[in-house]
Length: 208
Length: 102
Image (tube, rainbow over all chains, first blue to last red; front, top):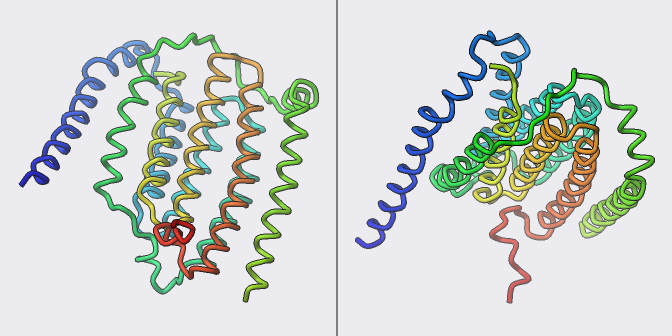
């Protein structure tokens, strides 16, 4: 009796939180934003941004809520590709290419390898068990409103951004002047990672 | 309604929240690593967005590149550990990996 009551109270609280967030968003925050942009019809770039952002968030939701670990991998691919596309809107072309090379060419392939090596594929559906939709949605409802409201309501000291331009040359200059020490330390970290991963994988083969 | 800083911040916040949900709810160690990658991606979107709309220059992008480098290193070591756990326990359920507990 007591447990069902506390459960009910928790869910009522979360539902009120979500309802209040959505109501506040639609009645107070969004009209201001729409009023700022009124008179300027959406450009093609804006529509492309909304499509890319939707694909990114949908992929991330697939990672979080999919029952099948392979579908989680496909969702991660969508999220990483979408993030790479978002970098282009932010005049970060080198970052976009690095995202494509390192995340999709390296990390995603590595994760796919791990999935194939560790899951008995026949029972792939039970291999991705989680606390379930309920706990996940509770965490999501607890974290998202705060972050989104902070993003929308804080008066950030925004400057007028310049036109989109390639930044690769300037990044190279900064790496070899201002950030030279972290750059070298990062290379040492990568070397240590390489050696460490090889040592661990070798041990595991010997044990067989 | 043209693009503003808030658009990118909202996308970054959603990526972070979904990554957090993945880390908290998954019992599969590889799934948890995927959640960590999502969280780092949300951070990177924020770094690039603040760099473009607030700071200027390229220092935010340099930081994002460092994050990418460390994420790759983390993924390599993390997956090697997961494979080792799988070899000894025949499972990657994180609830089973408590053999060092007294």
